[in-house]
Length: 543
Image (tube, rainbow, N blue to C red):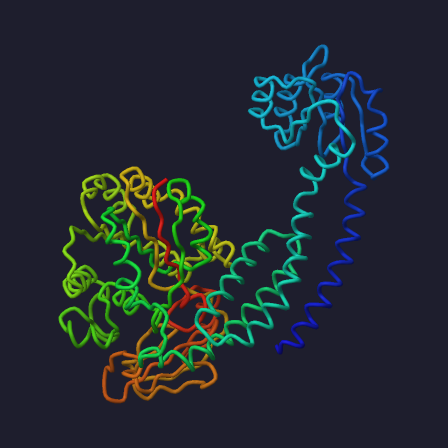
């Protein structure tokens, strides 16, 4: 979709939704039922008339007992409850209401400002607390805050995104630096998080279309600029330079440092669980860096720990590096790679390395973490998010739980706050550790297949292929016919690499339909996309 047609589509969609919202708002207001409980209800007639003129339906009660009867006989949206009444007090009535309808919002109104009354009311989960005398606008504000909150937030968010949409669309066509793409991607993630809970699904669909267009343009940028980053051009911080450029300066402060590398962590997932980290840590800096290609663990994470590109790892550490077609685990030597890098950098440190791939391993580190407090650097590689993305491919239940980016974030968030990793971070904060959180690469939800043909020695990854005599759709891939130009190893003289663009995944013609249906809407990595390549690096200090 061109920018012009995109803008036209956006405008039409917005106008339709605006009409729907106005219609729904008018309908919604007339349906709201209010129960107002006060032993001096006659004195409140002006307030009640004010609300009725605003199309609220108000029922009155003069005692707690009468209010409870009304609630049994009729469904209300909200209750205004006087605290000081004869017979059943406001607090007693509140307790009875919550027993009958726990989710019914109750606004407590009182003449008293005594602290214990406020505490009792708040402890009973009131929706709001007003001090007499109340004016009609206070009542109206409380109604909007408690009943109309989601609609108001939704409309304001939608309006703000509409204003930002055109700017993002225009910026997209003019970006010619990595830093520019970082800024745009951060904006897109911000709006994705802002829009994910709004009522207007059409607006979210527009954002998704804008993300797709952004990835199309980003792939063109990478195709053009990526090789030059190895020829002395102004390159961003990348996997193989991350440790030297970003981690080492943090180690020179003398403070013990915990470096956590969460495999396969996207920027939006980091933003989803960052608030839980913030309970124990305050963020000092947050930057983005670029994963090397392929955006796959055996390449990107080994590059972080070795400080080398894959072709250099193969040359300098032939005993540690394994190519795609070699047997054995491809990330079994990270500790040895890190040791060699530290030696090369001339750094004399007390350090340890821990890879966590199971709950048992995580709990073991929790139990023994205190013994690492004298170390300069403690490295933890946590594999859960990567395992989650692979489980989505292999297990139907995970496909259901993580069917969208929103649910995928939610699942990551739920895991994190209940994981041994959270316990490790809490301990680290208490022991005074500086915290660095980062990842090796991101991941993308693949939706569209692209046919590829290769021989039996072609690598199996869905987002990149390496081998000889590869046949593919040129428009769908970023091709490296000379792998050495981007510092990748050649398995043989005629080997090349291809990387899938955007949300594409490679599929073989044999048994094509089955293959496509099995892998569509799964999370994969190895290719070229904003989600895979632009990834977070955060430094935090204990509170």
